[in-house]
Length: 95
Image 1 (cartoon, rainbow, N blue to C red):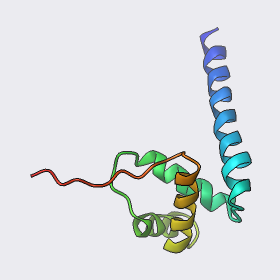
Image 2 (image 1 turned 180 degrees about the vertical axis):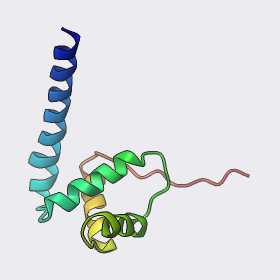
Image 3 (image 1 turned 90 degrees about the vertical axis):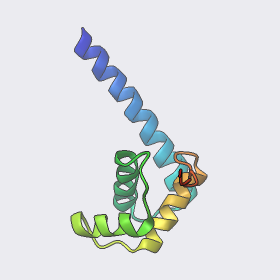
């Protein structure tokens, strides 16, 4: 019974994730390369709370997937922040 509940919860959460990304962000911002968009989203989710840059993400995607320019990464991150999936937190140096 527990595994069925976990499966149902995961299916529900994946459904919400896919609905928000596919029906809202990808459609509204006319994202052409959905695979790269999903790879950027996964990278950001894996590095949540860390310091990231468009160049760092671009280099990672170029090494592990297809060549991706930092302008494309910038555009897709802007779409994710406009869709309120992520938000930018200004860096503060504590001394």
